[in-house]
Structures are given as structure tokens and as C-alpha cells.
Image (cartoon, rainbow, N blue to C red; front, side, top):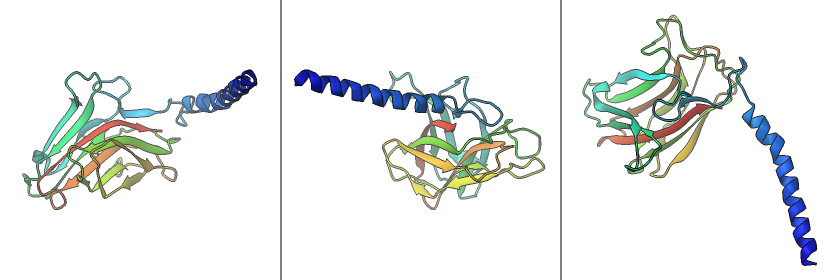
Length: 207
């Protein structure tokens, strides 16, 4: 009887594996409409060859920001992440600050650039606050204006971050993504973070 139970369990697990295999293969084989493999990373790790876009678009009180894309949570870690420190001093008098990841660097719609991301259904990323409770006014894809404006835009926020890592997603299903120069953006305000805020980000990618 025991042998029969083991045999049945083994057959059941094998069946589950066979069912999952095509699904995994389908996920691994997904591409943008132009054939570029997904996921399409904005940030995977410091200087990873899979990275796209440059965090060049500093906005508002840009003097209030410190940016580190090689930050390690523990000194012995191999894995890096992004740390954005906002001190909320209103250096430029705006009362808010943000960063756009752009292509090419410093592209505010004044020159041709960006990527054709049609076929992606969402932008996914990990985020957390150093203390928990940090307020992010907006996480955004697209939205750059100008002569070569982004073809679409989508955002989430406002939201409060937790101290533990959490995955967030920006839905893109109804967006025209044929030309996106502003791949990712975050904005924080002094009103909601009067003592400043430290935000950590990782694995930012289009799926």
C-alpha cells in the first residue's frame, strides 16, 4: 500500500512538472513586438549589460538628492541595488524632487530617442524605505513632452513604502509604447517627507 502511495505521488508530481514546463517556456520566450526578449531591464544590477536608460533627468530640488546605483545592503553582498536619498531642504525652492531614467541621457523630448516597448504589459520593480513609511508621490513610465514626446504614460501613486522589500507594478496594457524616452520616474515631496526619505529600488524591468 505504501509503495502504491509513493508511486501515485510520484506520478502526480511528474504531471504537475509537465503542465508547468510549457508555461515556463512560454514566459521565458516572451518578447516585445519587435522581437526584443523580455524582461527588458532598466536596472538589474550596477553596470549590468541588461540595463537600459540613464538616471539623468533630475528635477525640482535636484540638489536635495543623492543617488547610488551600486549600494549594498550588507558589506559582503554581491548584489547591488539603487539608493535614493532625499533631504527635503528645498535647495531650488521647488518643494519636490524626482529623477527620470532617460534615453538618451538628458533627453527631455528635444531629440529623437527612446525605445519601442510595444508588447510589454507592465513595468515591475522592487522598492522599500529605509525606515518604512516613506512617501512617494509617483512612480511613472513615459510622460516626457517636447518635440519627440513619449507616445504614452502610466503611473502609480501616491503610496507609502514599507521597510521590507515589496514588488510594485505599473500596468501598461492600454498604452502606446512605440517611443518611450522616459523609461522610469520617481517623485517625492517635502510636504509628505518633511524630514527627508531614503528609498531603495531594484529589479526595475518591463514584462
